[in-house]
Image 1 (cartoon, helix red, strand yellow):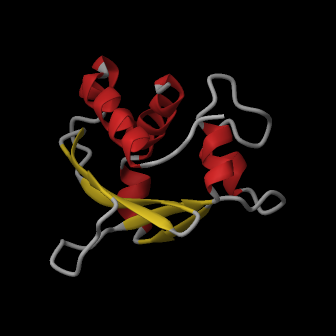
Image 2: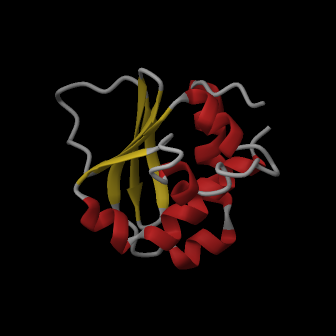
Length: 129
């Protein structure tokens, strides 16, 4: 199981920015969102499909986020496994009411508008050691 901390999240952001597919499908993906792991929130600023900023030190001076994906760190860790177990293979399985591990909060319009790129971006988590 991956140890999800700031270094891991930064490695994930680097992998996302190196991904060739995301350069195409994320071309118009611009949003600020939060990935919540237990009590820790990571603000992710995406511009044109590239992660510009990822930080766990969110201050009131920063621009707000549009949507948040929050789940226990153990759930994110299972999701990030190279071959995730059932109910952790995508965000829909994690958010399913019978499972209820992932909460989607905030303005869901940019979430839905960029869903393909976002899901691809999250799947890149499985490439981080």
